[in-house]
Picture 1 (cartoon, rainbow, N blue to C red):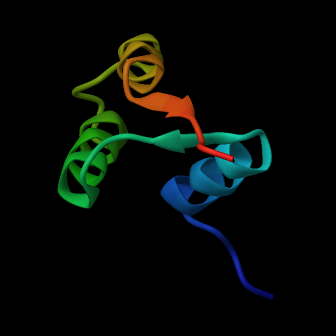
Picture 2: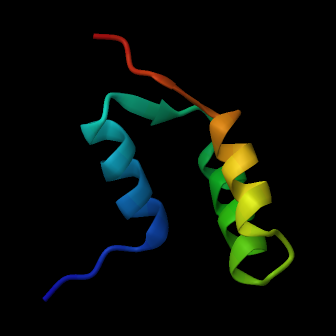
Length: 58
């Protein structure tokens, strides 16, 4: 059985709903690591995410 990481699951969820993350891979990894280490709250992650997603071009 194959498991997805949080970034993979998030990317799939957003793509299925017509969105994409607008941030470099390094920035995405850094923000996920901050959240995983407890340095960033879920609320702060949600704010970051809302500022870094956009509707995909059709």
